[in-house]
Length: 598
Image (tube, rainbow, N blue to C red; front, side, top):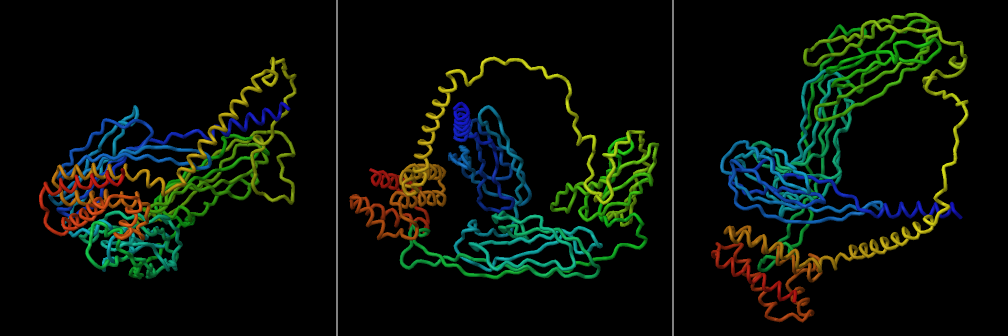
């Protein structure tokens, strides 16, 4: 009975611990485009994430840029449960709208903020301003497919020697096209090379890049490290990808601020391919040293016994460590000449290698196990390893120098002798494998009264079970509430609309018509979509009118809604009427949302 109670107590403790929230790690980051076009308006967003109070935000000076708007502040929160572990975090974003005024390279200095009791700073961000045209900001969800889609294969070098690392990068470049996915991807086979995949992103992310004097949105597709295995001119075959490009099908009739909802899209397939690349591979120079093991790059070597002195019949090893950069993963074990009185075993290789954009680097350790059979002082021949130095263009030989090992008399314990017929592999240190039995008397004493003999053993499980049941019910209600996606959209419709109207009011005060009508479009259109719980495919003027009438909304409200749509349509395609018209449209939007909400 007591064992069952103890088991229930432990299970209850683990259940309550699983329901406890884990505090999210705090961070402060800056989202800055790497390349912008001269005269372009762009956004810089600073985001503070954590579970503490956010305060004391300090923005940089933005030297070299004109600040059009900001800081525009927004707040969001997230809640996750993974394997019974919950995580809750809050994010505060500060958005600035900047405009370039001159060409060149500029640095946006760090911003700072206080999260809880700790102060965080962003890293300096470099921005390159070029004169070339900029592509559509909606490069991943744009409106049309143009002839601005290309796949490019770049190599770190086009001439090398056998075994010299070469990095190959495949990137997709886009300006105005909208990429919805990929099909029929064909990567090169790299015949004549030993190849290793360095980067293979699962989620394709586009970033701005200056290519040939133009601003493109580029995405890394694959990155490989190649090691030439044969000489001559080796051709790297082209890579091919079929891109699924989303193209907007314009809706007939008059346009409105709800075009993003009303218009439909179609997907067209466009095949892009790289050009073949020829790499000239030269053979290694003549005069290869006898200790050459295939290394090409720049390396260092150390060699030492596992101990300066051992006893006869005791297992030991000689460790040779090679470190550096190059084709380190293809280096073979150097030749080691142990004394004739040492019984040697199979070499063991251990790697700690990192492969990056500049090739492979790290360490490789070769362990040579052995057992000395007679006592004495033994001096082994130096361990030598030669490699081809790419920078100097010649062979270099590394030497450990003589290695000395003292072997004591030891015991004649046959347990250290490997019987005949047994494979000489995986020899381990006998001194670490054997543990002696303690023969002294154990000092035992009475510890006192056990916890299971007190009433606490009955009270604590009951309290924990009650807390577990309460936590389970609370989490169940939260799960049901999160599952109701439509209800969540309906409940948050007004909150989201108010936030967007606040952003629109800021643009109104700064007299920025373009940004103002964009935010007004998001506020009204998003509110209607969320409030009526209609997907974009079903959102039309007739459906909006039908849904509002089914909710007994006044005909004047419906009429004013469509009047606002027409007014915003005119403002988007005709010159602005001035701040008075913007103020009137803003008040009209707030009134319509308020009346629909009532």
